[in-house]
Length: 136
Image: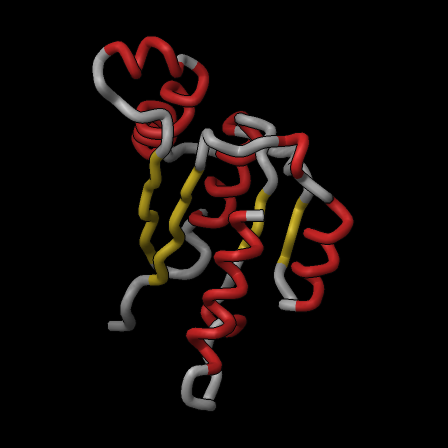
């Protein structure tokens, strides 16, 4: 049996909207051949089932970002991540896109084929560029 594909969700609350240039980000994503959505239109209402996964995402990502002061009072950070895994077609990208839609965040989907390269060091370089793009 093949290894399950993994999808990671990371959200950072330290983002400064004023320093953001959408055109340069869109151009950089196109250069790296990434699927990039400015603002996904989907949310958890478009995702059927997966109630326990949605609740985990709410508890670990959405609620801390919506109630920063409350979570900080209990020593919890408003940043976080969730690792989703499973076979192709089980809804990892769908729930990732819906999570971004829930908080009106930008969404970038990166496949393994967009990272791996047969030349030594090229895969690492591509991965570095993708993370730099995500930080921007």
